[in-house]
Length: 80
Image (cartoon, rainbow, N blue to C red; front, top):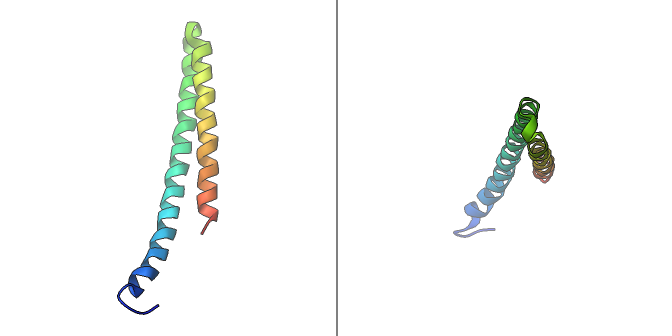
């Protein structure tokens, strides 16, 4: 491609790959955080038996979101 947009077109491809890599990194970091939240909620459930069912359910949801984010990170990392 020649003309005023030639250099911009090539740059967009590089920026897109970089953006996908950054998004994959963020998704992986979110997954790690969700795992930590789940671990914390499980410890709280052990310390607070009256709230254990609710806290364990929240921990399970955090694990579910961690799985979703790990899948997203994998997907974004592979789509280069």
